[in-house]
Length: 139
Image (tube, rainbow, N blue to C red):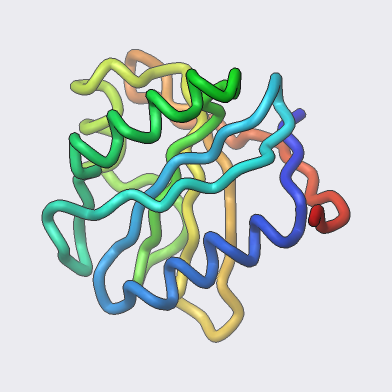
């Protein structure tokens, strides 16, 4: 089961709120299934309905995590006016990009209290809830 410290959940929610009304995006990294780092990535197509991770930012994060010995655990992005569930576009982009059987985290700003959910998208575009636990904040 993936674990994430509460302060990192707060960080991705804050990122979502700061980028509102556009979707934000980023990468969660750590070791095994324990998330220990949040990397904000520029949305190269700022829009309330879509995100595309800036390729240069994404490569820089991948290099840094590799240098630090961290695993890429999940991609995250926000939904500004819809539930924390992968849209058809999200699912299609996951399959077309080859990032399948990988974790996707969605933050919904649809309600006053943001909602965060984790999912796995497989090679056929099937979406499965991924269990996660929020742990005590890290320093």
